Amino acid sequence: MSNFPIIKKRKDFLRAAKAETVIFHNVLLQAAHNVSAATQNPARIGFTATKRLGKAHIRNRTKRRLRAVVREIYAKYALDNTDYVLVGRFDTYCCPFENLRTDVIRAFKKINKAFTAPQEINDEETADCAD
Image (cartoon, rainbow, N blue to C red):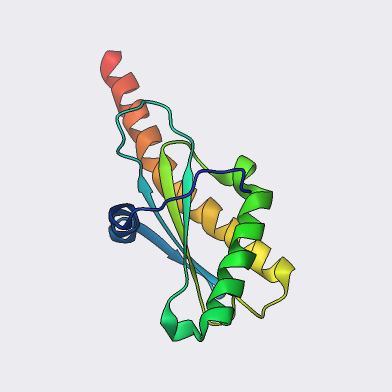
């Protein structure tokens, strides 16, 4: 059904909520490093739509649209050893699909930059110390 691993446990959703968060008009993206014992895990994705959005058919459509976007962009934008949680917002279920796709891509780029920037600085510092 999906080409990517899905987050299913509540503790993983809560861990992602406590880490990095990026907010755009149509989507909210949370991410955290995966803490499993394996060294190289593919990125996992979770989807959330709260009751504040509306009735069940609205929440279902919101999550369906988010899954469709992630299916298209997962291979290019998801980092290994990272858990992502996409949270639907009020306009997620009715906005044009291209706008939703653009917001999700921008959110992934922004949150990935936050995850990769500190590691690059640490690598440069260790290289300076070796000289």
